Structure formats: structure tokens, C-alpha cells
Image (tube, rainbow, N blue to C red):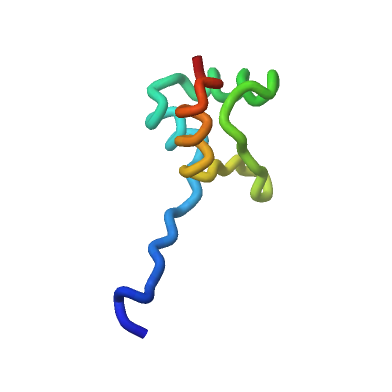
Length: 65
């Protein structure tokens, strides 16, 4: 296997990572999640995790407006 064969896997983002990326408070993300209007998240145990590509797609769809 060469280095060209290795696919870079981006880690899932925490709620703090998403808040930093979107430049919004963590509490805003929690409110959006309760209202089902924010970027999609999944529970991993007791933690919320966000797929970076899904957050970017959500931001680009205009749903963030």
C-alpha cells in the first residue's frame, strides 16, 4: 500500500468544534438540535458528534440562514 492509497479520514467534530467552526455559542447548537433546525448530529455514548462534511453541507444549503 502506498501513501496515495491511504484515504484521509477526518475525525468527527464535537459540539465545541462545530461551535468554533460556525462561530456560534454551544448553547445555540443545543437549541437548534432541540428544534431540529441545526446541522445533523449523532450520539456516541453520552457525546454528540458531527460529521464535518454534513456540517459544511448544512451550512451551504441555506438551512443555516
